[in-house]
Structures are given as C-alpha cells and as structure tokens.
Amino acid sequence: MLTLADVLEALTKIHPPQAAIPITDAVVDSRQAIPGCLFVALPGEHRDGHDFVPDAFQRGASFALVQQDIPGSFPTLDLRGGRLSEISFPAPPLCLRVDNTLAALQQIARHWRRSLDLRVIGITGSVGKSTTKELIAAVLSRRYHTLKNIGNLNNEIGLPLTILRLGRGYQRAVLEMGFYVPGEIAFLCDIALPHVGVVTNIGTVHAERAGSQEAIARGKSELVQALPPAPEGTAILNYDDPWVRQMAEKTRAQIFFYGLSPEADLWADQVTGLGLEGIRFRLHFRKEILHVRVPLIGRHSVHTALRAAAVGLTEGLTWQEIFDGLRQGHTQLRLVTVRTTSGALILDDTYNAEPESMLAALNLLDELDGRKIAVLGDMLELGPYERQGHEIVGMRAAQVASRLVTLGERARIIAEAARKAGMKKTSVVELDTIEAVIAWLNNNLSTQDVVLIKGSHGLHMERIVAALEIQS
Image (cartoon, rainbow, N blue to C red; front, side, top):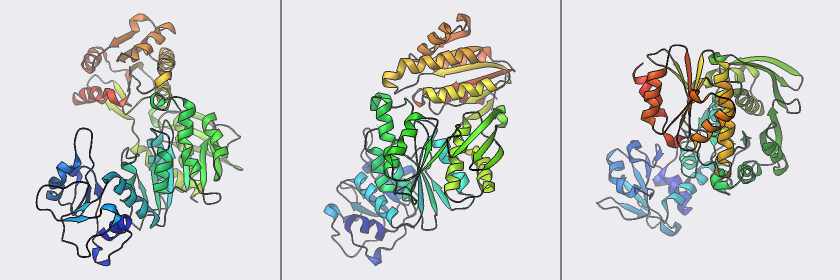
C-alpha cells in the first residue's frame, strides 16, 4: 500500500521511515474521500479543489496535496522546489504544499509504478476501449490479481489515480488510455510503463481536435512505440484495420495480429449473431481450431473477444481460463436492455457515439426480431468527417430500421441520408429535444418493437431510457 513516505520520496527523493503512514486511496473529489486517503486539490475551470480540502478532511482524508494556502488551522508540510523542509511530521490531517498539484500527482504515480513488480496492459483506439478493458481484465482475473481503470479514468488525471490504487499484491493492471492531443499517450505510457499494447481501431471520433484520421493514428501509435522490445513487449494489433496494421512498423515489440483474416495470428470465421443470446464463431490459432460461443452482443463483438483472447494467450492463460473470462466479463459491458410498460425492448447504448459504433449498433438491431426503431442523436467531435459520418449512419439506418427518430441538428444529416437511401418520409421523424423524443416513443411503442437509442454523451440520451424505464 502507498504510504506518506512513498509520496515524500516521489516528490523530494527522501524516504523518511517515520512517515510510513498508509494511504488508503487517492481522490480528486472530496465526496469520494475515505478515512486515510490522499485528497488532491486540483484547480478547475469552474471549481477549485482547494475549496474542498476542509470537506475532504471532515470525511476522513489524512492528507491533502495543495498548491496554495488553505484557510484554517491545518498543519502544512512545504515540499515546494522538491525539498523536504522538516524531519518531524504533524499528525494527520496534513496538507502537502507543492508547486503544482497535477504535476505532483503524476510524479507520485510515476514513482509508485516503478516500485511495483507487475505487468501492465495498455489499451487505446477510437472505439471499444472500455469494452475491451472490461473483457481483458475479466480474462486475466481468472489467474492473476488484476486492477483496471474505474469507469473512464483514462487521462492525465484518471490514469495516475488508478496506478495509486495498485498494491504490491497486484500482478496485472489493465489501463485504458485516451487520446486528445499529440504526445498524451506517450506521456501516459511514461507513467504506466506498459508491457502489452492493444489497439482496437482508428475511427473519426476526436477528428475535430486531431484534424484527420492520420493524426489520430499517429497519436494512438504512441502506445506501441512506448512498448519494450520483444520478447518483453507485445503489440496486439487489429489486422482488419489498415491504420492499426501499419503500426507494426513503429514498434520494437513482438507483433500479435488479431482479426477476421487468415493472415492474422489469431482469427475468427463463421461468425454468427445470436441476438441477445450472444455470438458464435470459429477460432483459429496456429494449428488449433476451436468452436466458441460467448454472451457478447452483436457480431462486431468478435473483435473484442479476439483482443481479450490475444492478451490471455500473451500472458500464458489456458483456453479454459480465457473462455471463462469472456463469459464472466460480458456482465460489465455498457449496452443494456430495458423493457417498457408497452412491452418494447430498449437497447440502451447511450454512453457515446461515433460512426463505427453507430454502425455496429445498427448491425445488432438488424439481428433482432420485431419492428426496429432507431433513435439516433448527434455524433460530436467528428471535425471534417461530420457530414460523411452522419450520412453513412443514415444509409445503414435506412437498411435496418422501420422507423428512424433523430435528435439534434447534426442528426438531421442522418435523416436526410436515410430518405435519400429509400426510407419513406413518413418513417423518419426529426426532433430537437429529449422531451419530444420521450413523448414520441410513449405514443408509438408497441409490444413487438425493438428500439436502439444511441448518440454522443453530450446529448444525455440516457434520460430517454430513464424516462421509459421508470414506467416499466
């Protein structure tokens, strides 16, 4: 377990034995403070964490990392400039004064990671990172004591917090890594030191910030570039995605391809969707052929299963352990099914949206029986791919859905493309508010309907599901 002495060593290079006080957790939200934890006061655009130091201490926090004076009578240890000004330490609660709290948090995580003997699996990509993380962690947990990011703690704040939760008993860590600006993943890798890098795919999400798919691929490739050379390092790459396949040229690590092509090291064919019961496929690895059935929803989930299996093989697991993990891990995935009072089945896939995951969700809808209704919202941050991305989704919706309901200004492009692709004008409804969508669904759903609800997280389309579920 992390101690105050470890924190001081990370920030001042001095490890005072008298400071071996356990730190139970590290948090940036005072409401999550627990007895014995470290509260990191981060200045924010709307709120300043320093205003909540007293609240964190009241909830039991032992230490607070601060970069400014805190009103009150809290004792403070001055660590500015990387110097330890005192040898004796007041009893908690205690403020630790540093020059920059975010930089200090990252340095503590960097130092703590280097003191741990475990293997780290890093995951990046445009679509499927969180699902992949859950399944890989479930597979590895069949043999190893494994930690994973909680939720989407995958950035310059969340990843260090996750690493500080690692105790010395952990054997594997599965860390999702987000990409927003060039150099970010390289920075996260410098903290996490991954041995295995998994890249899911390269899509158009974040193109608004990155500028192009090429720029996104370049940013995501920072993960495989950071891996140690073979045999210690392994890059697990999607052979079916040309952008990802090309990353093999950018790493010194061993290459492990997965996909639907016989050219891959681990590949699948005869993929059959079983609706909400899962998928069935044939798995090929070297000279082995295995017939697999797993409770992952949608044919597109085969790539997620392949990623988790590839990591399992890389980390020495048996097929039985891998398949047990896949069966266990599906309960952690984001797509949820909900029944309404009308008897309609809702596919809640409202966490986020980009063209690739929209198409995958529509493909799942296509596999199910019943009258199919697609409720699709804006896809944000597509940059120059905004029109093209929405048009592709609209064309697929016309092939799959009996009714199409769109939410938002950008989603009107989906509606327009669906009509151009042959969908009847009377089957397309364009709405502007969550309340209007809820009202339309309440007035139009029947027992045999299957409804997909999906859009970017910023639209908060989960409110639609909640309104329908409350009545169930």
